[in-house]
Length: 589
Image (cartoon, rainbow, N blue to C red; front, side):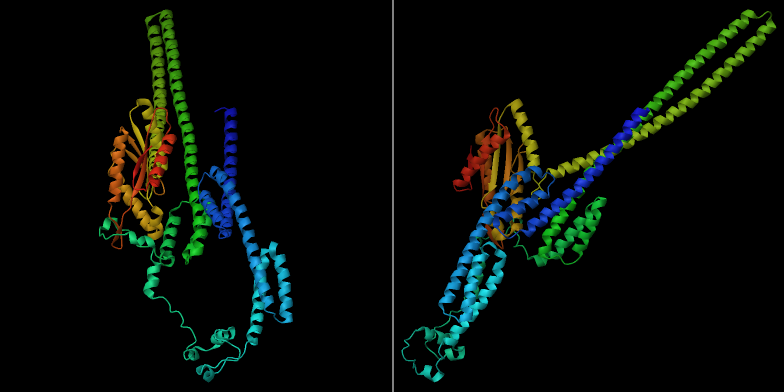
């Protein structure tokens, strides 16, 4: 390799190292920004429902690699939600201050003592100042509570003494006080319970509702939908246990997941610190920040895998350079062998020419004999030297070829391992972990393939969108474990009724998408009707009381020149019509 090429190579390696350092620095900054945003969103949680939803969506976006487009769409909605929340906050603050002002006015009407009255007027002026300073409200409320107690204490002291037991037994009242007067009410309030039993004028207190009524009121309304069934395959799990019951298992699962992560060196201290936090009891409030930190580490581990692959490519490049160098050396050895053969040919020709001259210049037989012996000895020596040199060159070339073959075999083995690993990761990335069906990424690949095949060969192709009816009621009424069980069972029921050429995927949530090739619209409607009836007939049950789960579907055919997105939109509109027409039905575009 020339000096110029070596210089450029060194310059490239230095630039590559600097680029890697910059990438590591920026990756660290991105991690800090992500953690800061997550902590800030958790600190702002609980102020407004719309802002909380945007903050939750932002935390989910920050756990992904591609955050630019998603954050670009979220930030305008977050700004609007914050502005709306601020307006509502100001409105609520104004209403609270008006209510406090009204309470001050009502206390002043009770004609409290002079000191209390003066304090109430000062408090009224302080309420006007607190309109723009919300942090003053706790102190204002505390002062108002104290003044209210003083006013009521003065009012209670002004009430007349309650009558004695004998007076109440014989029904005598004070002069000028009719039955049911405020003084009478104050008397009843001040009378002990043992004396109130003797007074027939005290109203009977309301009794607490029976325990059975409380229990019935606490049951979800959707429990009435379940019918009797005993099929264990369709048994929905019980409600999720309380967090305290599953906290040790959650911590164990998180520790196991953290121990399985292959973290880069710069993230290992963070991983060890998180592992220490998981050794003790993990309460509900610590779970969210722990999950956020774990998400950062998972992203770092995934990024580390990409870096390992980049390092492998770099090593592969270096090995290819060594491979090319070995080939060059083999070519040089071949050139040396060719040069040695040419040198031997020239030497042999010279020896033969000298022999011919010696024969022609010999005067007698004895001199001819000596000349022939000398020349033949020189020829044999040249042949021997050439043979030795050729054997040495052949040995060197053979050794280089063996090394070259060994390097090729090692590279092929490593490449095969990486191909298998990449294929396994790709296969996992295309499957939905809950249902086992292809996910949205797999759907996009298959849709592109089927559309290209349709546009090239023609025929018939249908696209259907299926959605479980009232799925939120299942999650709300029986818990997310029951919802997950329903999704898995429905996915299995749908898949086993489809042909091998059909393709179904989980599009998201409780929504599924289906490609039906080589089928007319009437046949697609019949297939979807079969699927709908099969899901309706599934004997789901909860605690021995089954429920009927249904789905709605919309289907649209492909036409010449139509894109996959356009046909999906048509099928989705047909699904909305099926929902609007009462659900548990199939509609065509």
